[in-house]
Image 1 (tube, rainbow, N blue to C red):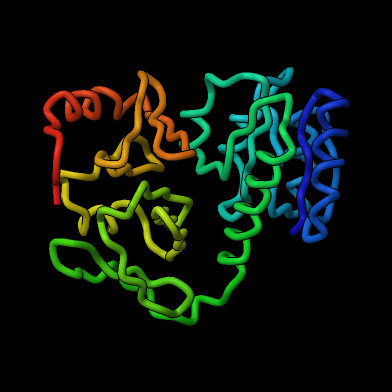
Image 2: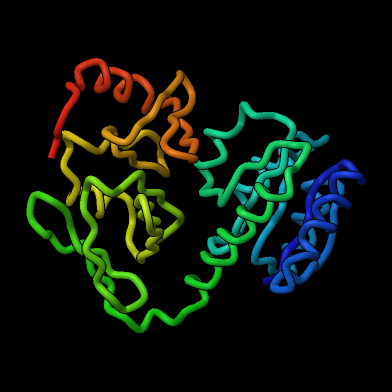
Length: 243
């Protein structure tokens, strides 16, 4: 998997390179101290993964992310937490806060590798929507198999370009589908769209604030345009069974 590093801080570029070297699947194409330099390079070269700072002189990392080719994957690496929700508007794989923590960095890389594998596979299997399995759940097509998924087991669903990741308590399924398609098979009494890239199971929420939702070990950002409807829904959400 070919990657580049875009960061105006030399020490940050070195830290990312050293941690990325622990993943033999990654091949470094180049390092750049500005988004403009990276954009110039990408005009004639293709990178599968971009470690991208946000706050840089001139063109910002977020502006660069909006210009990338469809299949380029982005992991933001930044000292600023306030851009997290916006990062998922450009389908970022992950959002890491400096100083980068190795375990968290490795988790983000594994997510990118998994998604890149899926993108690289030939689309030989038929693309279908979720199959209704009654009031309790649905079947999801992944890896040429149909998996029965109970609604109660789903933590959240993440949209990544033309795919969705269905994260359950024990499994993580990636399928060729978009959020709008899968949302039609979900009970609206239990599942809420909270950003352009996420649907959450309201029953599984541990806590939330004005910007984020916490479920198990996951932090899901709340999109600004979805916040009012989501908070309003929670105010009317009764406790108990919503199957």
